[in-house]
Length: 244
Image: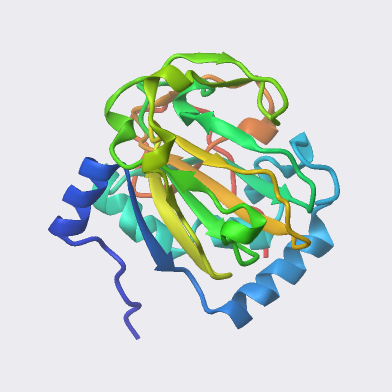
């Protein structure tokens, strides 16, 4: 039986290019995500926020790999980046009650990739709503690079200079468990402190094209994975998916 296609329409592609983000979309139903969430909780220590143990777990955790390479994500990314796709980073963002803010920022400010091209998916393992600090984005903010300054009182060391954006234009990306949205490497985004009594667990999936060089330490935990098409450029060390 032929699997369904999740490729974007031309209208959706133009909207992504114009706004810098797109969604929400459904990766799986909440009951299926509950299954994935249980497997992730069994395999990954989520108790320490902002830990290296939350990064690139698609390389050794099969449920994380399956989420990162789900056709609902990759088909849509392929519509924008083309048929050859490289998964180079993932991260589990967990915000417990009382967690600090993630400041307004552009991801590309922190990333070791050249040229600076990436599409991210933010996948909700828990429900992510305004109450428990869902991600917020500023539409169209990807068209300009924003200077970043030292950050105080947040989980990042740097944040976007507030003189260069208007946060009143922000849109909250509320997601049910099992939903996700796509966004550009330059879109300004943020999440508030979690003042609720509910955890917010999400998975950020970072995908680029094989012609992008990922400058990472010589460490197998930093290998990229070819998840669609061919790697004709051979710029990066390519790893192998975890076994089921």
